[in-house]
Image (cartoon, rainbow, N blue to C red; front, side, top):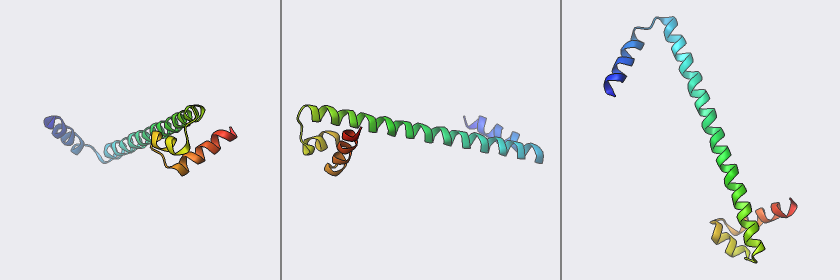
Amino acid sequence: MKGIEEREVAEIAKFTPVELKEYEDSLKTYRDLKNSLDTAEEKGEAKGEAKEKKATIRRLLASGASVDIIAIATGMTEADVKLLINEISKA
């Protein structure tokens, strides 16, 4: 792998100023797109986790579990459980 990186550095060192600018612009575009996709993926995961927590709370409530039991089962604080219960009740 190290040999490949050294060759790439050597190739980049041979770039003309115009080629170097184009390379840097391309690299910036790639990094921007990658960051956007990573952020979207993280948001999607967080949204899915929140949806699953609500579903878990619904099931626990239906089985008669108390807020403190739900908090322990979900790893959430009782205050957060109460907030989600209010959201679920409004939906």
